[in-house]
Amino acid sequence: MTKLSNLRPALGTMPTRLGTVGPADERERSALRSKTEPSFKWYNSARWKKLRMSVLVRDRFTCQRCKLVEPDTSKLVADHIIPHRNDPVKFWDGKLQCLCRNCHSGAKQAEEKAIPTIKGCWY
Image (cartoon, rainbow, N blue to C red):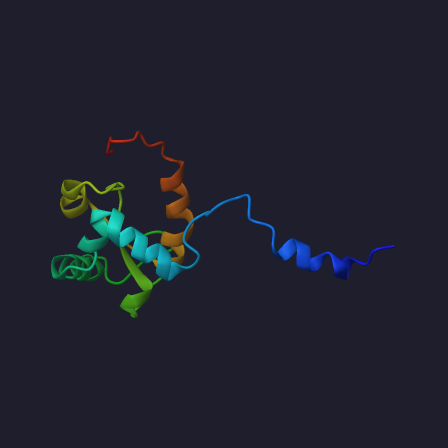
């Protein structure tokens, strides 16, 4: 009878059949997005940082969903109420709201993913 430990070397040499699924970690994902999505560069601009802070101040550092008051601005997001989908007009002139990271990363992202998209068409 063959022991399972004898199979381990054979399994290690087998090629993967799934191929590359995507970026392995957040750093790789970020690097890929910076090359493919124009809005990624907009988020690093001085113009965005000023606009973001004006939204946080306007909303008094309060999440518009859960009403959490958060003095640490690194835990707050200036969220586009209507997804911009890399449209510069919607990105810069769209309505924004203050959300905490939990609300933005959870329910809001799930809602946006549920909106059907048509390739080449921005909502």
